[in-house]
Image (tube, rainbow, N blue to C red; front, side, top):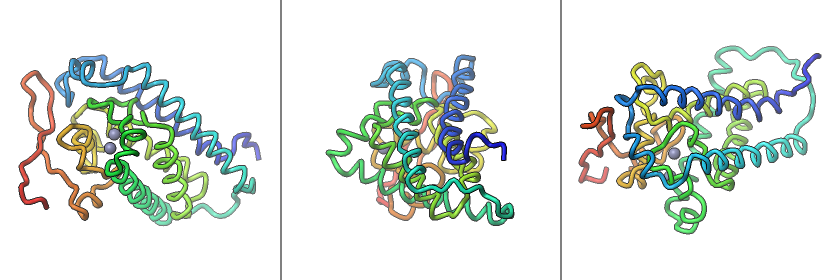
Length: 259
Ligand SMILES: [Zn+2]
Ligand SMILES: [Zn+2]
């Protein structure tokens, strides 16, 4: 009773709202004096990136509109409007559903992402768009070709939703969380006390390596864990060093043994 907006609709639109709110916070933070925490200088951000801020905003919005339309169509075709009346899932059930969804999303995204690098056609026409940002920033996180958004995020999201068995209501929180994590991984700032940096080895620095020329064939794992890179030998160890002009930078650690 009383809910004009269904959980499915919220699950579609909450992550979009969360995306712009969370990356908006980083825009405000970034306009302050946080140069000592940047992974790249402001100059590099302006000079090395191959897409303008305006193009990035347009690209992200286009992708979000297409994904929302597809998600609503999917719900209309497959979903029932039945109200959820069952008992609330226990914390253990919720944790299991969250972890399952994280593992499913990670697995799907690792293999699709890696495939888009290996296949020259797909890289050239689809995934290279995301790599136009050599210096990632928060609202560039979902700057992708619309097809990549559909394949990695929409299909991956649908799989993690279905296989985890979570309810549409729980999925609102899961997809919002995954969105925040992805934005954070692209924020370009290594701020002290950032909980994502403390709890996840797959984090802003880890994904920054993937955006660098030396790292494009490594660190495919996204958005949560590093396990697939570790298991399949695409893990690039790196160190976080102080930059001469302030802030930090990721540097590859010599391997030589090819893991
Ligand atoms: Zn990539
Ligand atoms: Zn990225």
